Image (tube, rainbow, N blue to C red; front, top):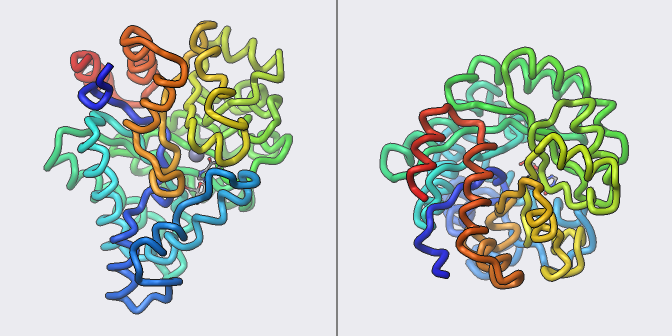
Length: 330
Ligand SMILES: O=c1[nH]cnc2c1ncn2[C@H]1C[C@H](O)[C@@H](CO)O1
Ligand SMILES: [Zn+2]
């Protein structure tokens, strides 16, 4: 099966994990930002987490470098444009980009300006390529609940204008959902859709709580429902969609290798899975690579591909018109 020609949808991709190394070097040179090297291979290595990473926390260290060049309107716009440009080359027709606006205030940018800059970059790419994008605002679990409220409030005016959902990300502790119940509830009231990173580091109960306490419609990763019957059951019964990211899951040691990835068993058991990159640069991957890895590993068919593509269509936070358009591609 030639996956490269098939239409693709990506629902889980972090902006700050998906920068072109060339762009990091170019911005750093022009703005006099100190980075470890100006050598392309060296920077590529600095931006990419090793496949034999120790843990999610080690993986997350790779986000410090890109953050240095993501502190101006112009750079945020450029980086967002380039991400959609790269995705369009892989036949990605629709993409939900996520990022944490509060990470980009280090040089004094206003949170609304930060969000608008990313939306502008995505729009630039939409005008030029056959791709459509929406934006998910991530709240860092390492920051306070007040910070999560700030993201929800400041992002509110962009609902219906490119921002579609709220997310919780970063290091995963047991029971984090209970801490962030209030801001996520408010986000829902405002009209944000909800996707939550959970079950990425061995704690299946976090998925259960993300669904029950936070009303998550989608789960980022969700690998560890495999070890938690209650979480597995609720995800299956309520058709909560899993945004799975195979390479990232191997890197963070959620699974030991691709063969052990539960995506195929979940899919065969009727759980709604989707395939995503998580981070194109930090995981040194793209949509074609993730699809190839999984389809080769599990000998999956075109029918499987269509089902997973349609899962992404159903689960995406786009308007009906976009969903109809996406269905026509397959
Ligand atoms: O896979 C992930 N799990 C939890 N947090 C993540 C993952 N990939 C990226 N992040 C964090 C690091 C980024 O700085 C932040 C916002 O995109 O999201
Ligand atoms: Zn993620």
